[in-house]
Image 1 (cartoon, rainbow, N blue to C red):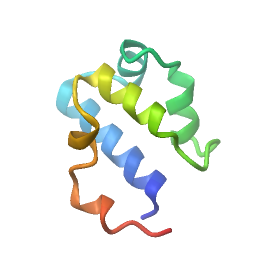
Image 2 (cartoon, rainbow, N blue to C red):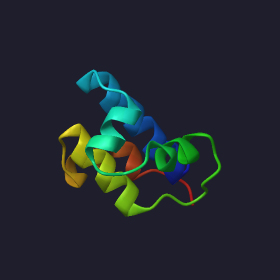
Image 3 (tube, helix red, strand yellow):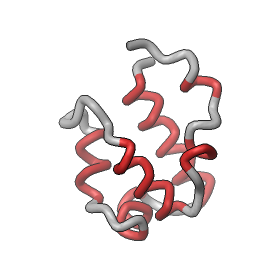
Length: 77
């Protein structure tokens, strides 16, 4: 799994846990949903921390909570 795959997996997990969708989280965090959808669809090869942070704010979690999964330590470059 590469870092983008890990981020996409975590976004999906959080949306399911919180009962929200990507669009809601992005808009609540002040970002266009297209920034996250571009990552999910593979149009963006390098995710920005600011995009992940906006998603986190919209989902009501911290960056530390977002990245607090073991698979982030095992990703491939």
